[in-house]
Structure formats: C-alpha cells, structure tokens
Length: 496
Image (tube, rainbow, N blue to C red):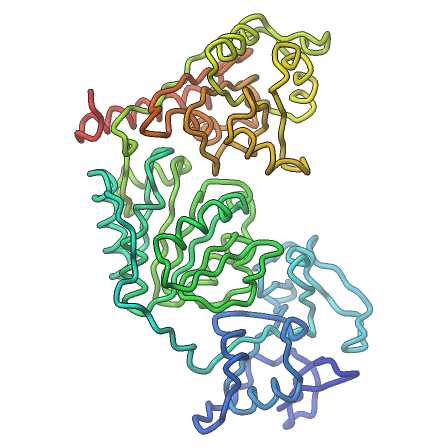
C-alpha cells in the first residue's frame, strides 16, 4: 500500500493486494508499524502532531511524507466516509446532504463529492485523506516555575479554581458558571499550571477572535516562559506546536486528539451554540482520556436544570471579585419606538437617558436589535453630541472605535449584539433599545447587563431595558441576575 502521485499531487492510497486506487477501504487496512530506527523530520513532527491536515497544507515533499508513512509515523483517515449511503465529513462531522456537492476532480479523474460546510479550511473530498502524526510528540522543556502571576483570587474564585484543578487532575468534565466580570480567566490559571506541570497540552477555545486578542496577552503575561500559540483567521501561529494554545472554535477543525485539557470559553455564544460542527471540533480535539471545562455566565436551560438536579458537575461564582452586586436591569416602556424612528425621532425617555449620561460625563453603550435601526438612530443622537459612534461586525473601523471608547474619546457607542461580550470598559452605563426583540435572548440580555460595573474602581452602573412590551427573556434575565446576587450574599461573597 502506498500513496499514488499524479502531477506532483497525492491522489489516493494503493492497496497492493487488490491493486485498487480507491480510498473506499482505507479504514480496513492497517497502518504500517512504527519503525523506531527511522530518523523522522522534527519539523514534520511539530507540524503534524495532534493535527488532521490536507496534503496541500504540508510544506514537505511527497517523498518525505511517503517515507514517514511507510515507517509508521504518519497516519491518514478518509476525509469523507459513509454511514450506509449517507456521507459524513470526518473533519467537521457534517452529515447534512445539502452541505455536500460534487465537482470534476483533477486529482482522481472522477466526479468527486466534497464538503461545503468546512470549505474555508480547505476542500475535503472523497479522494482526500486527512494526515496526522502517529509517532512520539515533540518534547517540551518546562521551567521550574510555570505560572508567574501575583494576583489574588477572591473567595469565590478560589473555590472554583480548586474545582478546575481537580477536574484537570482527574480528567473530568466541569462547568464553571460564573457571573459576568467574575474573573473567569484568573480562575483557570492554577488549573492550566497543574496541566502543564504534568506534561499535558492545554487548549482554550472561544467562539470570537475579539476574545482571543484580549486573552492572548493576559495568558502570555501569566505564563511568560511557556510557548503560547494564538490561532484565529490570519494568525501567524497557525502551525506552531505549543503546550498552551488559544484558538477560535473554528480553528479546532484542524486538530485531532491533540489536547489533554480543552477549555471552551463562552460556551453559550454564537456561533458555537448554533453550529454542531464546532461542538464536534471541540470533542474531536480532545484526547480519548482528557478534561473538558466549559465557561459561561449564561448556561442554557437544559444545563441549568442539570446543575439543579445534580446531573452535571459544576462550580459557581455568583459574585464579582470586587464584592459588589451585579447591576439589576430596570425596565422602561418606550412605546412603538420603531414607528417613531421612521419619522427620524426617538422616544423622550430614551433621549433623556442619553442626555443624563452626557451631562454627567458618563460613558454608555446603547444596544440595538438590528443594524439599520442603529444607523438611523445615529444622526438623531449625534445632534446631542458629536462624540457618538456606531459599530457592528462588518464595520471596517470596528477595532478603532472600540479603542476610542477605551481611550474615552467617545461619549456613547451604539452597537448591536457584537459587543454583548468579550469587551470591558471600566465605567459605563448600558441601555438596550427594543429589548422586546427576539434577538435579545435571556443569555444576550444577561451578557449585556454584565458590561456595567465590572471594575473595582467603578463597581456600579445603570442598566436599562427600553421596551415595547416585556418578554419572557427579559424577565428571566433579570431573575437570573437577582438570583446570583442572592447566592453571592448567602455565601458571603457580596458586601451587604
């Protein structure tokens, strides 16, 4: 059995016994045994360890790849398999027929099926194997002191941190249910230290690039002598082998049984919750025996129920480190504000709310359900103050506007749900316009409310939900915040 090369490209694996060139029976053919005397290429080892990559992604010759395969150091799996007649993408787990298509393949010379779901990571087709490393993993030399962080955990953080360490040591699953601004990142430090000291590989995965960019410098500062890979679209660390990896959940599609500890941050956030392929990727990136830790301020109803019934192992941090309660949202009816907006007007109570912040020099975030509504409101509010901007995901100046807000160059920033999480401004008030809109789920509203009162210097803030009718999501969000405050008081984590 060997790779078949056509026009300098790998197209298939040949089964000598049957003289066939199909990948159809790959899983039934044993890989060659590992030859310990073979001198493998360290760069190839580092490139492929814990990965599942296409042949086109490897910057090595086909001869090098072939020799490593024949000596048992490279393994391969079919890119697309079948359950009966139903295709399955092995890389992303897609089984939806509508996400598969065919094309005339120059590699195998036939009409070839491919997966459109993970196409942005490179095309996986019926004749495409996924290559991985079966030899020993690269050796990582660790310093005597792995963690160099001098901060102090609050009582609530310390309790959760101990449970994280226990989960890492015992290869358990754990949900860390912590309020917005509780300091979840710091809670992970000792667990990461325990994993690294034990020679384990750690990955922190989060749905959004913004969070990666904010987490990376904090983790590099806490673990300054550890190689940290930061993976997102366009990242220069894409093929860096590291004991500690921070990645978007999309990037996990390139990993296979790589990590001893996987930490999924913001597990309730889009797109992770809506995309099964990302959940599949997180599960596939774990080693068979490993730890998985989920972090969230807003677990879904199913998980909340499992926690209450004792069916899910979890740790709660019901209070922020500064020992002040979470700001409880106020509800303010504003009538048919969208109808008024068509006349280029906003309700009087919304305008008064904004004017109060401008007069007291208090920065604020103003959340809108839809971008066109936000953009139509911008000139109305700018008539009050020119230091007002609007931002959304496709805004080319998005990062700069957020930085302007941090530098206090803006008085007010209008946004959609893109800023509901992953950003921190030390001293702001928050308002939601049209909180009745279905886009504002319980989770989204809790996260939005969590933008206020995050810093020890400014631990309070006003949160107002302007609405044209209360929704169940609004009521549940406020109930959850009040419940966490009560638990924080009960456990002595909030100063009354």
